[in-house]
Image (cartoon, rainbow, N blue to C red; front, side, top):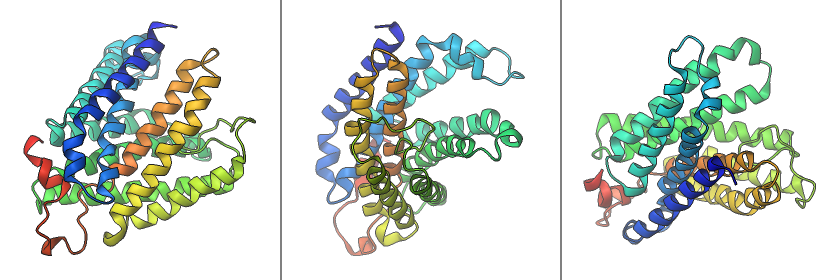
Length: 303
């Protein structure tokens, strides 16, 4: 096992253990769909920790993706790795979340602007260009919702971040759902180029199930009364996909391409976390008349 693979596994496992150990107070403060939504920051943090160690242990290779016009390619590879690790620690410990979430969103949007969009002219007619570009955009939007959810209730900045971020996540969920319907033999979750392995049973049915969950969940994010349940259900489906689809895929390919397998696990887990985060800060319609504190209210003091 290489240092890169060992580091990615160790970082993900450590973040998972710490996250679950610190989860009970927030879980008890939540109810209903919110008890699934509290998993969002943990899922997001685990994936960021995995990718952080990939950057820190394989910086020389990843530096090749830095734009040519930007000096210090190796520095930026290490910088992004350190940034992901700092954000992962912030999210799992639930400290300085307001600023770490917004900075995470900003960095992801800068990656889209400097790495993805410059290839627009050559990739415009390539659907995988759009899938990858919208993936990073969706991750940024999820972090925007997280950052907005820990602003004081009713604050313009927090409300704007949540509404814009949630709309972006919802629109991309619908786009990905359509991709699942049109190309059901490709891997599910984030519909990338890899084909579903032959040993996976009923791949078309699985693609349609995930597609329906994303489609209905994406639509639900645009209606106040269904935001929380839509994010919770769609996020739960993606979590199940991560464990029972990409987990076995990682095991089956571990001796041939473990880094790719870990990337697919981290990628889908990050998307599951993104969808779960999209439900944060969305109070029930009758919340104004309720005396029960919301999940965000009960944890804002540490943000």
